[in-house]
Image (cartoon, rainbow, N blue to C red):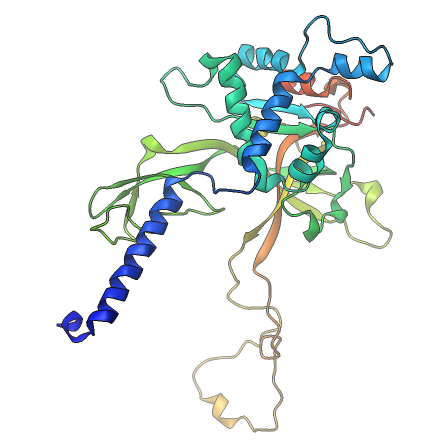
Length: 370
């Protein structure tokens, strides 16, 4: 009766708008990675770097010998052999090598827009593994592996106090002292959900720093948005650990309290930092939403009941920060680290062998050489 009362043109627009919304939601969920300008170029160039870079060639050019690599040694092909031996899934890349190969890729794509182009870098690593070690692509049960890329030996190591909003999404290194670590837990990266109304499976739902369900059911005849059950067989989990990192004692300005940062470790980087370690963390700074507290700072606590508000005179001023228009920001910054370097460990390695040593030791490499 309600639809019959609507004008035909309005009814048509409502149905077409709903169809467009459902179609756009399906297209968004069907693609695991959003189309990014220049993403395919980043994948192609980074794959060429992994396949061809040789530090022996770079050393020969620096020495003026001009001789090409007679042994055919390629750094990351050799590192892949070590990954295969230890069943690893993280490829460690020396950032200095990438700068020598292609400075534009290193600075404008990887360093300046790491969070944006990280899916395309990982896609290049998967293709690199597929070309040289196709047996590594899947687990024994036939399920595809998730491969990761981690960078070491960045040209600058920031202090924790220097991490600002301009560093969000960039590839960054900072040093600090670990004060607290959590236990290792499984984290849901990509979830598969089954519609509770029509049993349609919605795969590869990316989690947005919280438990994220599909926007709408893929079934055109079902408009479910709220009722979902998690299908664990189609989900992808990864090891997760939270670490609390504090400023180094020699970096705290006089008269100031040491600042701290929450660092998230995933995959092979977990358990690489222990309380008391002085380490360098390389990854990206992100902003995540945080729930608002029930009582804001500056709010006045009043007892309910008694109609005291009616007794206020018009001459009484506005009390509390919220009444003055001041709003708290319900966001906090966290650092997602892909590699952890214990700078106090003499067995951590050297700058020249950063990439290969990182693979052998699971990321514990001294990239500063001190």
